Figure (cartoon, rainbow, N blue to C red):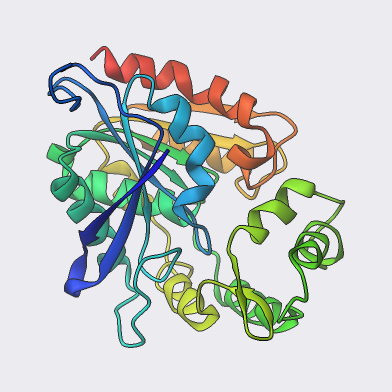
Length: 291
């Protein structure tokens, strides 16, 4: 099952939150989760959407109330032209989701940009967060060259795509950023496309993605990382964007940091190797649950 729940984010932006799978039931009378059912909020990365977490959320729902959020400008959440795409707005949206969904204190699971949002919220509102999983996100600054590369990459997309098969092939094989064929990457991007009058286009506005990105690529984020007092797990794919040395330094900076890596996985760890991803994070979740 997939159940949508609307959330009001910062500045009144309407956000779509999703439960994939039945939440644990402790009250046979009304089927609602009990007060001791731990909450999990899943935060996708830039250009992602809540449905990218569907397989993770389904196994999480066996023991947790797991909700994935379409962040502002993404998925089925609002994309108002004049909306703020600042770090503060993204963090406030996640804070609003925790409070309005009744998930707190929750474990935050974030991929890439969503991981940055997770640790920034954990640093700012420790009362709402009991644990953080940081998946393939760097704490160091990426710089202006990175932002230019992304702008040029968006311009290289051959949109509109005639078919979803063309989407899968371009992002999985033909994209110049692809070092070797990657079917999972093609599927990942196929999921963020929708059919328009002239073909398949992204569900997001590329300029809004660049605006979102420019609010964090020029700065390092070690200070906020050091302020995360709850248990934290840094996960990287062996072929991902987060190098081992930086990941281990992030673990050192985190007051209660732990480290895990997933073999044969790139940046899209949970998509590339779902079984390896589960094996990497489940022991951490069990430990946090028992605290």
